[in-house]
Every structure is written in structure tokens, then in C-alpha cells.
Length: 161
Image 1 (cartoon, rainbow, N blue to C red):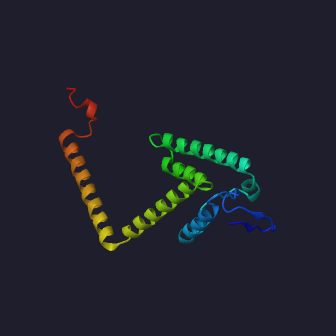
Image 2: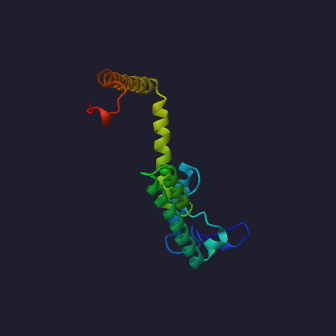
Image 3: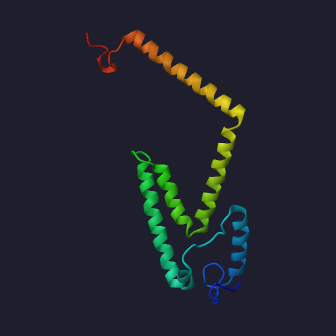
């Protein structure tokens, strides 16, 4: 599907290539975009999408930057730092260019919204508060037992008499 852009110059459907299957891909992207907000596909500037070699190099650069950010997030998971936030930031970088990342982020947003909605349900909220209270009571009982049995002695000095 060839449509004129705002300058009146005809361009290809999604990536500017105008290759086979571009019409179906553009229609599918428009339909998928209607359900999730923004249309799926590249968000590269128009002048980059017009040139296939430039667009390909743009995609490689976006992939490498996103990969570096995701890798940094994975390193932060066991170390101090906002690991999951950085991973999702890297996914967001990938989502500016790749449909698979856009779909993964849409799925994640939908699941987070469902979990937030479920957490506001009075029955679930009451259950969570009850489980939290029971957990705190168990921790307090264990702490009280420890203090009754050993006092304020550190665990590594228990058998020194």
C-alpha cells in the first residue's frame, strides 16, 4: 500500500521498502494498533525509514542500545539497583523499533493492569491483609522465642561460656 506522506511523496507501508507483503503488514499493524493504542511498527524518523540501508543500520543501533540496557538490568537483579525497571526500559527502547517488543510490552502492561485491578478486589485485599498479619505474628513469635531462649546475645556467641 503506497500512501503519500505529509510532503506528498509516496512512501511504502511500514518500513519504506514497499516490498511484497507490505500491504498486509500495514493493515495488520493498523488493526493491532487500534486495540492497544499506537500502531505497531517502526517509530524511526521518516527520512530514515525511506532508505532501506539507513533503516537497517538504525535497527541495528536500536537493538544494540536496547541490549546493553537489558544486560545492565540483568546485572542489577542480584546487585543493588532497579533491575526490573532497567530491563523494562531496555524493552521500551526495543519497542521503538521492533513489533515483538511492542507486543511484549502491551502484554506486560495488560497483565500489570489486571493484577492491580485484582489487588483492589475487597476479597483479595482482605486475604492479603490476613496473610500479612499472620506472617508478622509468626515472625514476632519466633523473635520472642529467640529473645526468651537466648536473650540479646548474638547467634555466633551462643555457645561461648
